[in-house]
Length: 147
Image: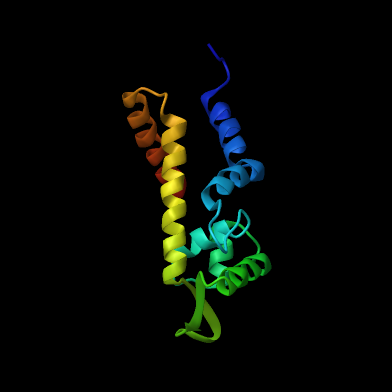
């Protein structure tokens, strides 16, 4: 039996999960052969999908990429026809980012792929352990978000 404290085990696992290399590997499978999006721009596209309409500065804060990079990646996504910029009705100097229909279709494909990757990762787990994991993970995330 592992005598490492539970919190330390969780911290170590989260550290591995959140590593850039882990995320890049995950994103690579999500964006494979999706035109206009890659491992670098996927977090921006996904963030816009969750928050739209959203300013670049708010998006940058939410996804953890600096505002300059976020703006640059959003520009690439706009050039690819996945994201549209529109005036911010609350601030004439600012623009908001929103998915285009093509962007929405692209993120839908990526999310189906993500569900597939999770299903594959959990396929060897007994059904009751998968259900407990989902419940506990939801509870853990909600606890962190409420702080």
